[in-house]
Length: 296
Image 1 (cartoon, rainbow, N blue to C red):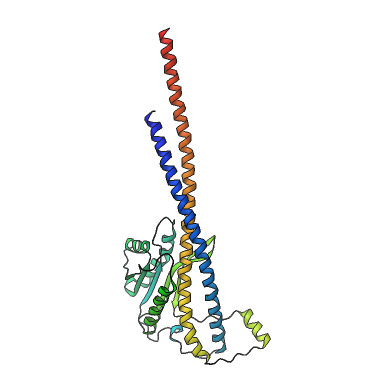
Image 2 (spheres, one colour; image 1 turned 180 degrees about the horizontal axis):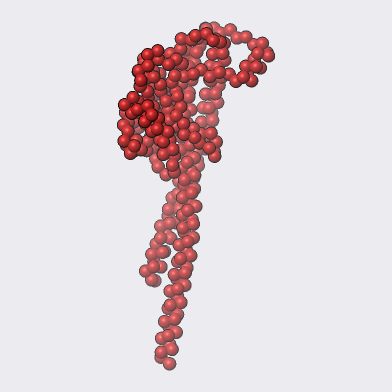
């Protein structure tokens, strides 16, 4: 067998192995995506309901001044912020990490790297921060691909304590927001100070038509003092869930593209192999016929 035919045959085998690996990774990412999407949808319903309750309680106060440290910017700004970046710990997910890091890095440079503390979730984010020549203050290596509420709750509680103590003017989260299967948007969300959501105008109009008038016990301000920490924790947990869903979706799409590309390369190599084999056979037949003719 000629050398070029052996080389093409080896490349066909290598491309086939790559195609099987990428197909397997695509199936694994698809299974994880479905599981995480269900989890994120369930958490989103809880987060939305908490926000609705907070909005109703906040609307009952009208324009009254509220003494809510989590919803009020510091009276004496310290000129320092904290940003948490949610990146992936594994690769093979296309441009997912670059898309998450781009607005985060831009925000850090706008604020000034000396005026912001940076915390990272995911090894790829640490590598990209080093590539951008930016420092990482804390790397959360204990949070895996499937974030647990207990870990996120502890993280949110620390952020709230530092914010209330006046250590930071704002706490932000950079992550990939999952909107739909076809749309995910990188976002830098302001976690603190938390602005109590207001009910929709349609809901307010319906409530007004019904003449509903709520009395809160304890007071609405005390209720907000209890509900706002829950809102912060649930919002951060939802950001973690959406980032995990977006990562698996990006990996699933990237591995499908890699599988399709490997299939196209395999077909091209098979055509080259067939042509090379046909040329070799033709050459051998020509040599045999020429040899027979020389003996006559």
